[in-house]
Amino acid sequence: MPLLTIHHKTEYRYTHPVAFGEHRIMLRPRDGHDLRVLKGQLEITPEPMSLRWIHDVFGNSVAIATFDERAKTLSFTSTATIDHNPADPFALTPDDPAYFYPFFYDGEEILDLREFIAPQYGDPVASFPHGRGIFSTRKGRRRRSIS
Image (cartoon, rainbow, N blue to C red):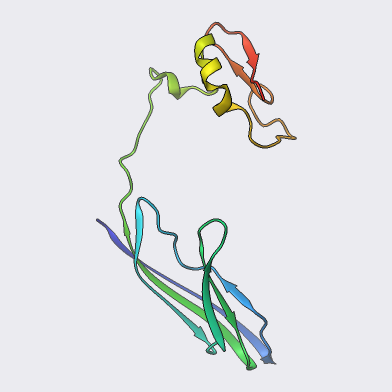
């Protein structure tokens, strides 16, 4: 269980005192299956008039700070202690069928998997290796996925 401490500081300096608008601060690591935030601290100078925390649509912690005074500097200092437990590495070898991409499916498999391998979003630049939505079969024929 390796414990890590992350220390981050951002500081802005101005020639004359300035007024600050609302700031969105994203410095807290996101908890996951292999990472837990054990302790977190956020220091802001000058002290904000209000500070509230929300989660964005991706699950990130976002601090929203508003200020009521002018200052020549603005700094954000974040310290987080995390417990990082990465999964054991999973290395494929060339003798594993999943090693090669695109994956090869026989006729029965492709019928069962078509709902899961159909593109969910448009791909205007056709970034798939054999063109958009085309999957190879073991016999070397190409089939277009059903959308």
